[in-house]
Amino acid sequence: MTSKEILNISVDCVVFGYDLNTKALNVLLIKRYLESEDKKQILVNDHVLTGYHVLENETLDQSATRVLKELTGLTNLYKKQFKAFGNPDRLTNETDLIWIKDQKFDKRTITIAYYFLLKTEDVDLKNNKYDAKWFPTKNLPKLGFDHEKIIKEALEDLKTKCLSEPIIFELLPDKFTINDVQDAYQSILGIEIDNRNFRRKLINKKYIIPLDEKQFGVSKKPAKLYMFSKDIYEKVFKKNYLISI
Amino acid sequence: MTSKEILNISVDCVVFGYDLNTKALNVLLIKRYLESEDKKQILVNDHVLTGYHVLENETLDQSATRVLKELTGLTNLYKKQFKAFGNPDRLTNETDLIWIKDQKFDKRTITIAYYFLLKTEDVDLKNNKYDAKWFPTKNLPKLGFDHEKIIKEALEDLKTKCLSEPIIFELLPDKFTINDVQDAYQSILGIEIDNRNFRRKLINKKYIIPLDEKQFGVSKKPAKLYMFSKDIYEKVFKKNYLISI
DNA sequence: CCAAAAGTGTTATGAGTACACCCATGC
DNA sequence: GCATGGGTGTACTCATAACACTTTTGG
Image 1 (cartoon, rainbow over the protein chains, first blue to last red):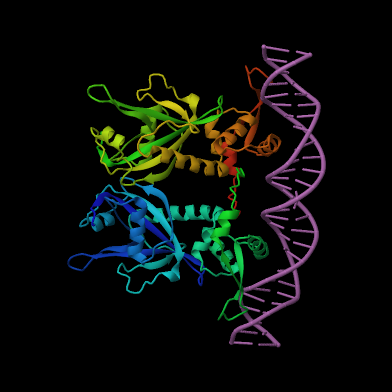
Image 2: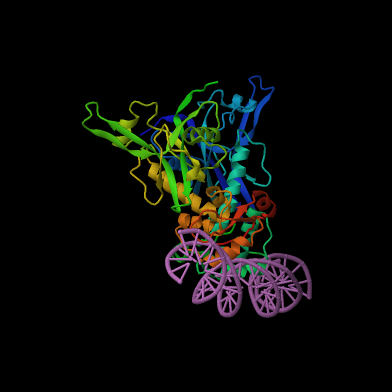
């Protein structure tokens, strides 16, 4: 069963991928490239998020999930709808107008923006049909449309969210070291954390399960591995109403 | 300058009003009422949020602001875009179909939902052209469309938000007592707070300014009045990166 | 003088913060 | 044996939580 596109409503996906090796939070972007007919001029040469029209018969969540699967082949990732963007001028700078000229987009398109969390290594970028690439959030390339704004707002939301919910583990492999978790926090939040205090805090959590395993194939002292138990987290979790204003 | 409606995109406004007297958080709703042509049957009889199409040349924020002004006459209120709702079936239950039959709505309309914060007393409901009324969030009437869901999600967001940002003061008059603030928190969060601990905590904040004034015309011991200084709050505020997972 | 709400203090506990060195391993 | 990152302990401070009675006022 096919379904028609809604021409003025899209979803855009900010795909955050954490790279354990470089300790950097990345965003997956696709390339926009267009030359003039005589090939003498480069008309468009930048990057954008992936997104697509919402289809008539699907929910917004399904739409985002579909777009992500097209791009990465992955499903069942952490997903959050974080904001709608719909300024009348969001697609109307010169380059963007050239780009959408031959496309089905309305000039006034509202986009529902989602972000997804995963590990960079989980996406196979070879033969990716969109020519997708990872870019560190701290060093974004030139971006089309209002996508820089969308990424920035996604990142802000992620920063807030990772302080109160255990989503950091969505960015890490199933088995991780305490220092991996610390690195991830430091990279996302842009802060330094005291290692001793952090260890103590994390190891004391009942849902951080120590494994009888160590790292393997590292060139220095291998670290102890842990895993995160979502089940235990949900059982142990009690909403705390600490008013911190 | 007039502007066309975008037929499949709307904003809906969850207007939260706090009533200091009843100590209840309320939502402002308008009535839907429709009889059959022979007047023998009531076809639609429930309540909904206010909302309207987004116009071609306005931003989403402007759209929400416009709708709120139409309803309440007020501007410059605390406003938050909190979620987009766009399930294909969100307007398609039987009653809703009857209601929108003669309206310009597409059946597949995405709505961008906002909530606003104010004091119930600030809205003059006499002669309100939409027949708007306050309903306590704890006792909502029958609601059309997916508006119950929208209100519930707005309330959840408000609960989270009021723990980390000083938006509680948007719900209170400029001059308030410590107990007013406590009551507001208790009502919104549905919890009990120890008065002594709460007082100490609040009074110690530099941005809670004690006034040389007391309540006036109350039937018991009048309480000391305070005000909230947004300026001082913003100067004093330091983002704390407390990881509380 | 009475009813009602305002206002007040102390202690115990737990969490956060600051801080520097030894240890285990691979090479 | 050495370089590298892993791992450890203590003391201080501050915020929270628990808890019950007195004070002030209007009527």
